Length: 448
Image (tube, rainbow, N blue to C red; front, side, top):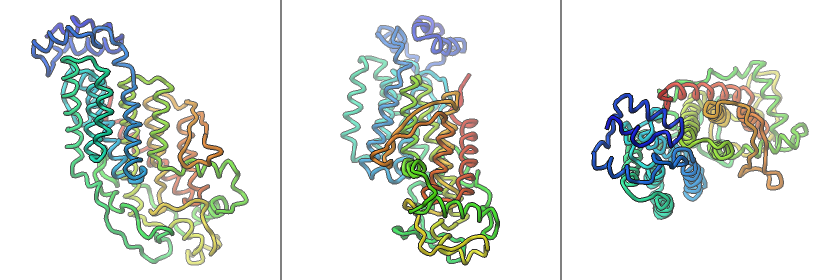
């Protein structure tokens, strides 16, 4: 077994993978599948280790299942409930990541700790994704079965395919077990208070969505309060009045100062952050030809960053429990601030989500996703154009020359939509970067 990696001609899969295998060989190449019969059988297959370079570089299976998971979420509830859909897509990408890194251990795993270099990457990744999706959306199993069959049909039958399928099962089981009891399915209860500054229900909603989510178990953070933003400015402060006036002017439905481009910005970014940033991640993975293993990690990091940002921001929203601009502007005669003028007929440009105002969820999620992409791609200077499900039909595309600039525009869009104050989006951007940096230094780190 000691010379297995050498005998299988590691150099044929490229210098990068060969270097990884040489490190394994130097350490004894400790294989879980070290049955001589398996080794002999695998050595006769025409697989990646004997010339199939694309098997370790082509990101098609990861990109495809990202879209498959998105379609499943849309079929489930229109991709509305992040506690189901974002949790599911994050689990799926972590299972793919762990399966692949059990074959070629480039990055540290999340939930599965094993080593099976005989497994076929495509079979392992597809099976892992399939099993997680079946767990999240059992009523769509027939669709997932058909998708899996298509991917497995691309893999030449034999030992490596069988071991890959087994590995995929194990990777999915590990992440499902790790997230069991995470309390993300708890909805919780909420009753509004009645003091100036307190959140009040905003029509058409008469509830707060998932008020208990901030107390659920994050994927990487210690707790939801770990990066809780500092308190918002006092209602009587000049800082509050400045943000108040900005949103009152730019965010009103019939604003005379909001430009056409700013209106398009507000509408373009109005879709859920996890929808937009997964689309951007999928786009960049394809356009920039990110190899299989870095792509699997990039998707896992982006989604882990977004969902932990959700936990952090929901925790802060419940803790501070602040009113939305529409409530604040209509009732500013009660805020004790002589610099704010009430407008009892003020309406926001776009519909307010059924959650408290401070801090901004879109800002924290966008900042976290952007930092994950910058870290994964090694640069912020990335130009791209993308569409949105909430953009005006006659102008569906926005273009960017920087990933972080896109996140900052996402934050700004909430002021233009009339649903946030500037101090809230600023706090969200800071917290999102903190969440991302914590995850990057604690999860899925490079082994070498």
